[in-house]
Image 1 (cartoon, helix red, strand yellow):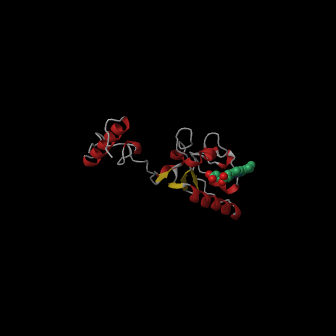
Image 2: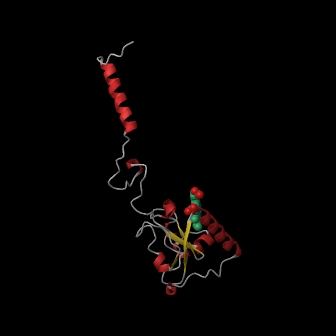
Length: 165
Ligand code: HEM
């Protein structure tokens, strides 16, 4: 049987085989001019910048306040001195969230008393709420919330008095 290069099918096949062989013998060694910043642009790639890191910091009522989901994308709240990053719970704590009052604030009393009323919040220029009047069941309630938040959100700082920093 003879191979007739003259037919269109055989010509196409021959060209394809030639192409495939040259790809094997002379593999592509081209390198990208810049480091790709996304996976589609190449197997080896680097993100444009490092992902934001969360630093454990001390916050005061005044420095915590801007993290209320309105002035800042990040939403933080404190319970019993521990500051949680609750940005992932924007539906709860964002401007239209049911618990938006707690955003950027010390939420300890509200969590203890199971109330999101504004009266539960200590004005930011006042000393920290010492919570000394809370009943044992209210303290237990608050601890339960701390456990819930610890399992769900990132602890990103502690709350200290305004004049402590
Ligand atoms: C009208 C009564 C209330 C209803 C119907 C209600 C409903 C809910 C629902 C459906 C969730 C979501 C649960 C989940 O997806 O895990 C939730 C979570 C929550 N509720 Fe309420 N709630 C009420 C009262 C309160 C009160 C008075 C407080 C005050 C402290 C409160 C604080 C919270 C908190 C802190 C969360 C957790 C949000 C999170 O995981 O970030 N709730 N509530």
